[in-house]
Length: 454
Image (cartoon, rainbow, N blue to C red; front, top):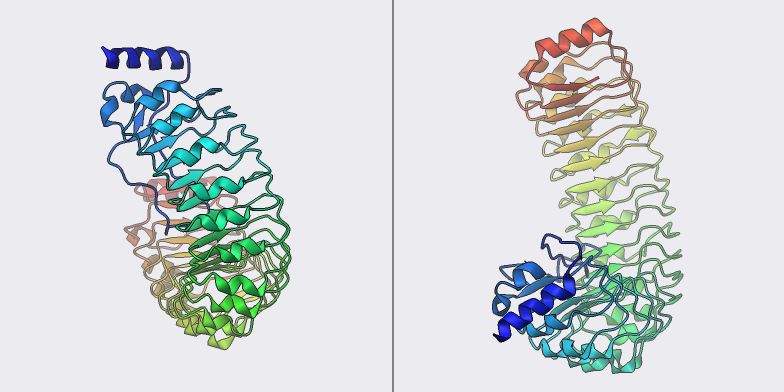
């Protein structure tokens, strides 16, 4: 009988709201924070499913329901560990929430809160809170009363300071405070010594204090969209750092001891003021992803080839005129983007990159494609759009693993003989070239297993 009453209450409360398919996502990670994973339960339930077996519900999704008040009947679902209330109109949390003793994750992002709800303090097992996109200006001192918190997302609020007792969160591993009212990295942050991840994007920060070195266990640091013009050498003491995001700043050089970040896997320095790739890169022997697009880079240092672990390299939107031969020894490189540069030629040594899967050479000034292109036999995606190509070498047809070829906006009037030998080819985009109607019709009839876009 009690269960029937509970079910009827939930139905009445949510009548007329939009049904949504259950799909819970961890919205607390915004900078590839693979280190902090969401709770892994076997099932995800919408409210409709919860009404069928309330005692079995582990995950509950009430996002995008236009809720103004906290649904009281949810408090009866005592087994819930993961609760999503994002994208509603909530301004407060009912005290009944505290009955969810097993709750570990709660998403309250994109609501209308102006104060941090103290009811959360009574959730003794809470580990992760997403409180982004609200309107709080003060984080209360009582925050320390949630000692099991591992992940705290406060992005896009109005915070200008953090409470001293934040250090009471002894298990805090990830702190997201993007888009608030900070203009400096607050001293309190350097006392959060358990942090693995710190995100301070778009915060008008112009200086990183030397105390950054106190965050000994930091693995991911994101400072995108700030006003940084230099980095302290103390940054390089973060021996466990694996991911460093410095996009959209005013940087033109890196610390001389940057090579000491020997565990760095991902580095993003796009949209800065670099004119060259610093020679100190050569010590980053574990670097796998480098994004250096949208700078003014004109050359690559000779010892750049020592980055033997590099798999992805984005060098697009720079001032290169020649595809550098220094790339030729990056034997593990799988993805290379050198689009929107000023490249007029490709040095022969470049074609030693036999593990390359994706190559983007679009928006350059190439008048011809070297015959050595056939040596990149593992390519499956090749982009040559917006160049000055008048023909393609027949050797291109030896790329038997190529699946996608894009050569839009060139000066081509024919395709190389033997293109039907490219057994993996599925799509060729050749828009805005010089093909006649007869040639296009002939191509379509001759190569019916390939989709062409003229």
